[in-house]
Image (cartoon, rainbow, N blue to C red; front, side, top):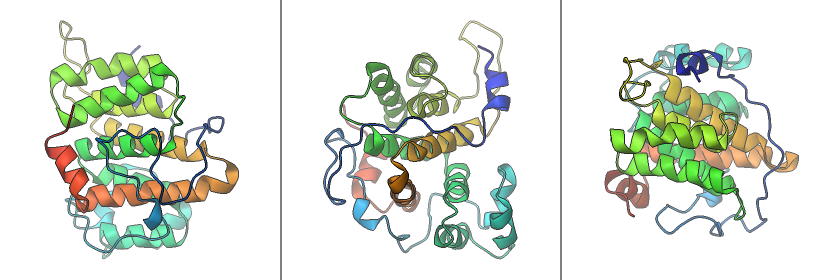
Length: 249
């Protein structure tokens, strides 16, 4: 596989998967598939954006982030030079422009935080009986987030390919792998990645996972995922801070 080609051809709007087996439960219930080492999904806050600045996003203006990805026409008409990332995110969510909001966060967050956000979303979306290759891809991405190094990054490519580069788990593992400065095998000439391949893969993973919900629950899942992303961007959850800083095995 030529990874530079993957960086160019990765679709901006991912095709929906068949609905995953997501058990129905009250919004504030703990997902049965989530391990104790992950923060609880914030389903109770999915209806709105938490207050507070997005501390992990360094850009002062949304206009500094949005040229990195294609906005929809409606979102483009709403963007002004004065809007902060948080203000623009509020507007996008108010208008239910969830793909634009997802890409804004994915491209605005640092790579490690963006991959962690994708991991949290997939833990919320995946059923207890997910295939082993899907679980392996997600766990490989989580290992890199908790201990970012070449030893944890490089295995993510094989895990991504095993799960499938057109699946949420495969894209999440690809996002972890593409975070490095060299996409080539260790003994091959250096291949530099597209700087924004991690963000593109994270956005694709999250949008695809949301699209895989039952049609009546797609908007709810978008809001849930965005709330998780906002929490990561704010460093507002103590569990998120501890996991991102130290991790657990």
